[in-house]
Structures are given as structure tokens and as C-alpha cells.
Length: 132
Image (cartoon, rainbow, N blue to C red):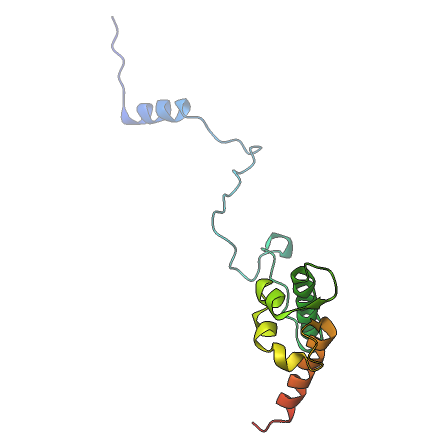
């Protein structure tokens, strides 16, 4: 029986030959990103959506009036176009219920949405002329 002499160089070559090698044609493994981008140089399509810019001035007033109109219509369960103090309170319109006597200038016991808008416009005008 013959003996095989194994040197350090021979052993290193054998181990290197047994190991798999990466070929040049293999694409690199995709990177996994687990945290949101905070880098300003991230491509726009990869950035998370930004919240809409806050409305100001007339646009904000129109949005608020639209939301108030929707709440007013939802509270008007009888669909008659007016609210009593109790309907306003039950519909979650506490501001209207609390200022009902000031809004109902005709003293009808019910207010329309136009009455509410008129009252709010008068309050806004009074606040604008008040010294700061």
C-alpha cells in the first residue's frame, strides 16, 4: 500500500476545488429593505406617499362648510331642511345647540343651514374687527 503525502498546499487546493464558486453570470441577490426610506436621494417612485398639503383660506373655509352641511343633513332626520335644538344636540352638533338662541333670530324654534352660515359669517366678521 502506498502512502499519500498530504502537504498544506495540497490540502488547500482540494478544499478550494470542493467549494462552489460564484459565476460571473449569476445576478447579485436583491437587497431586502425593512425600514422606510429616509434618504433624500431615494427615487420618487420608491418614496412613501406624502400627506396632502393643508388647505388654507377660502379652500379651508369651503371644506369646513361642506363638512358642516353634511353633518347638518345627517342630523335632519325628518328631512325638512331645519333643525330644532334637540335634533342638533342628538345629531352631534353641540355648537349649534349651544348657540341656538343666537342663530334662531326669527324665534321659530328651528334653524336652517342658511341661518347657521349667516351666524358663523357674522361671528367671523365681528372677530375680524375686534382689536388684537
